[in-house]
Image (cartoon, rainbow over all chains, first blue to last red; front, side, top):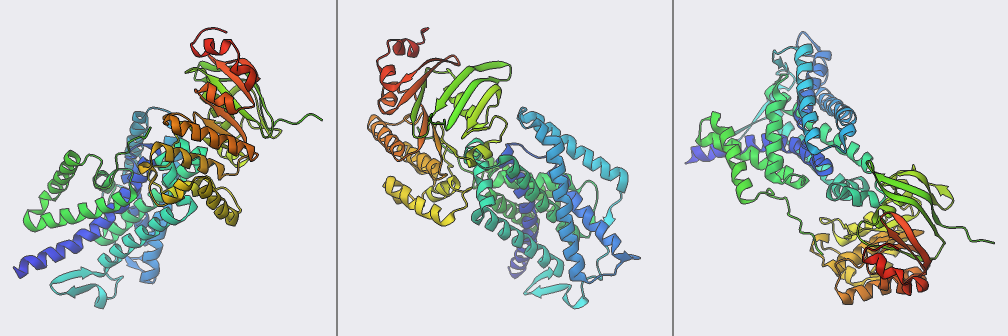
Length: 310
Length: 241
């Protein structure tokens, strides 16, 4: 009994970690869907680029696979630059692949996003190769604080960093969305883009800001997972994108709190499933939950059906 | 000396793709006037408003606001320079509270302390909104949504207020109240251009009116004359004038 409780606690921590990451990815999907009613299937690649940027930064500041910079500074630099590079790439994608199709049918945008995804994946494959890039960071964290034991639960230092970073970014985003004029403009644009324009909101600028924020969070998710599992490759964006999309639909596509809740729920359910089933089945459990939610609550957990009043 | 128009449309033609919807529209609106734009379905009334706002771009002709040609200006520029709209079907933000909806209306204003006072003034004009201040837009009744849409538009301090079908979907009692409020807003100095299907009600409070038919202005006269014009019925029943 104690053993199962210990396992569940351990999996809860694992689930919160990966769930926080799913939430960050899902926010990007849901924000873009909110303002453009499109699924940005290239979003997973921004996650992958986030991971690669971190690895490139690590290469620059390492000699013979040994980092030569203060650990806190290096990790912060990796996270910040990953977010910045993914954000800039997100902006470029919006400008080149989506803006010209703004008035085209949604299917054209969807196909364009798939094309962008395939292009970025193959671009990285061509220039970086298919081999997994390993993060040699085992010596970055001092030995005494690499892992913590709380009861029967083992928490690594990097896992704590990932959880804290995810929740910090979610809190910051929530404050921006709730308290600032930019946030209110994003919400207004997501709820009714033409009415937002009627209010004097520059909706084109808001769409750019949404891509900027969503892509930066995708990049953050990418580097955080790469730091946690110490590796990245050109194909990681596909699976992560799929999970982020699932979390966004689970929470109610278009809803930012829904994306956060959906991500956390998906991560925890996946982790818990590992306690009872072989780990290979965790995706089956995740998608079974998604199908159940879509059958019984098609608008997702926090999505709302709006009835027009006359 | 002749009073300068606050808003003017000169020979405006507009299209949706290859289909022309407005033909040589000429309108001249003076400060403080209440003008109604009448016409049957698909006559181009809402398109005229969208053309003024820059959402539909005129193919040719000029839209002039306070002496400045605004044809190529973005919508947010036009709104920030004194045009505001109460859109058709209200278009309030459903998952924002009443207060947030009002704040959005005044978002581009720099005089934040005055905005607070103006919001209080809106609550005096529409006391029902104060009672619903924390409720989300989607739970409001149609009448409350209409009040909110009007208050939100007024909070941008417009020099010209556009109103698209303000009586649509409201009960007869609310329609009377609605037109009374519109008249009061105009009397306080706001210039209003109102698109309305309810021609009799609209003309009863307006100074002048324009009647559109398949994208062309077919009548342009004082409200009084239009009310008694024999062609009005014909225009509304779809006949030729």
